[in-house]
Every structure is written in C-alpha cells, then in structure tokens.
Length: 212
Image (cartoon, rainbow, N blue to C red; front, side, top):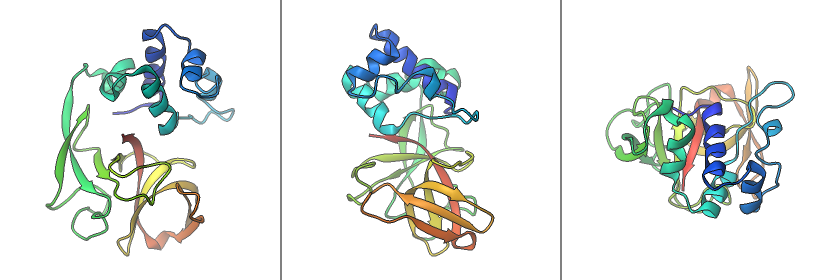
C-alpha cells in the first residue's frame, strides 16, 4: 500500500539512480527546482504533502523510467520486490454510476468487474476506475486508470472519487468537508466548484494514483 514516506523515498531513489539531486531531477522534468525539497514534503502545521500526479508523470518521462520500477523503489507497497504484481478490480468510470457495482462503503461488489495487474495491488483495499472521454482534462485523460482506496482517510486537497446517492460518479478535489456539506472543486477549470449535502453523498474514496 502507498505511504507518504514511501512515495518520497521512491523519488529520492529515482534521483539517485540517475546521479541527480532532487533539485536536478525537478529541473530535468521542467519543474520548479524546489518541488521535491524536504520543506515541501510536510506543511508547517505538520500535515503531509504529496507530490502531484503531474509531477510524477513528468519525472518518469524525463528519466525514461517505467512506472513499475518507480513504484517498486523506495519500499513502496510494504517493501514488496520489483516485479510483484497483483490483480485488482477494474471498472469504467462511466459505468460506475450504475447500481450493483459497489457496497455501502464504496468497495467493489457484484459482477461486471474486470481485473488489471498492478504492482503491489491489493484487491481487498484498492481498485481501478478507467476514465473515458475528456471531461477530466487536463488532470486525467481518456484511458487513464485511477487507483482508488476507500479505506484511506481523505483530507482537504486530496483528489477523490465521489459517488452521489443518485448514482453520479466523478473525480474531484476535496476542498472542504463539514458535518453537513462537502465542497468539491473540479479537476477541469471549465467547471465551477460544487457543494453537496452530506445526505446527497453515497461515498468518497481517495485517489492514490493515476496509472497513465
């Protein structure tokens, strides 16, 4: 399973393999040189900060490394060895709004799910939703697979999959959550923020990763 420490360790390991500092790695990928500095990993109030999917995609492109090698480095997935893969459930995001695919806690249920191999995947804790269309650009493209973990705690700023009681399923950014409402910001700048009553939300699950 992902952890904050492991993902940053994987970035450090990637830089070391290419004989770069983390600042050099960021420059190579066209990012701010301070993007991966230790000061960027934890906020002043102690809250863990995670690198964006976009920044990870850029450093993989810049170094020519595969996502498998990156995910296996730095002790990701509890230190599983390189090449360890498991099958996790896969469903099209467009299909996810139909009934019968999820239980009350947002875990896969019923039939109709396919399977996809994913490094260190845990079918009991994660699943994948495949994006279709361009409504989630620029964050996610057609064919991207969102790796979702219903058990993970969600915090302000996290990218999440939200399912309403009416069956709408979409990927958003959690901006604010209170006892009565949930404020969501769109990944697509063409769409306005949206506020839902807690009673309108079936479940919210954190997006751990986008498999590009």
